[in-house]
Length: 321
View 1 (cartoon, rainbow, N blue to C red):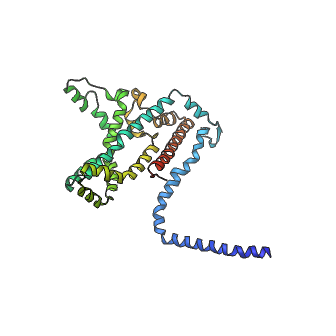
View 2 (spheres, rainbow, N blue to C red):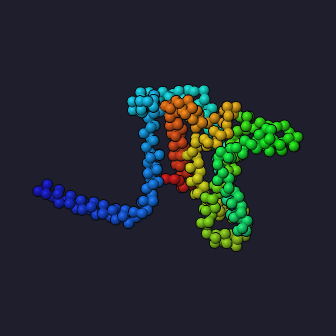
View 3 (spheres, helix red, strand yellow):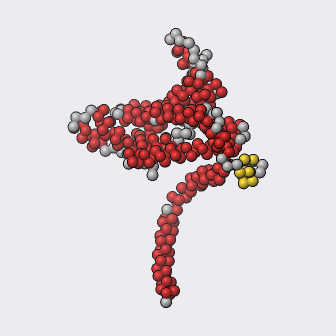
């Protein structure tokens, strides 16, 4: 009797599961074209972001391309210890943090300020012209940007040094003196990314209810007070999300631009974790050591984004998850 009752009780559960599966299939079939559109992105994510995780074990092996990953001998945390005890460790951490934090302090607020200023322009033709002009640097190749920076700062023919000499000063070798590299890196980043970054904040501002501004005008609020008490609080969730994403990549300094702008004379302030990985891993063919350093860098970024996301969720009630 107990077995019969158990079977009777199981039949409705199986029926319910069958109904649920039928509903799922109907939803999939109803949205099949949407899923087909998503599929290439999903495939890209799997192939280029999840499959390579398998290769992370190279950091714990004495990897040789001739024997493969699994047949390479296991060495544990040997390469991590070697990196931590290296004379370059603290220099790389310091340079990475200095460039990243400088970019966040000076580069992150720039698109917000630009968006606030553009939003206040009432002449539509002038507004569109300004937007087009400030967006253009984003579409210039980083190679071209770096070439322009090097040419403009040349000690012999650069326009910056020409101005300095015209004012009675002496020519400065900007690209050969380590102390100038952070300013060059951050300054070129502000010029290239500010216009494009302002698009997100301008889009957020379009969602602000115009009646809020009308009420503020009736109450006698100036344009400045409208920005402080209406515009900024409204776009604050967007600012927080963008800041979380920026903090999450604090140890991922723009490799391409650093690689194009630095030289052995400026390693003291320009050499960062990503460029060090490139030199040791690809140029020096020390794949396991470079993988260990890269994995360490990724773990640091993960810790940063999880920690800052938690802080923002408690303080502002806005977070990525």
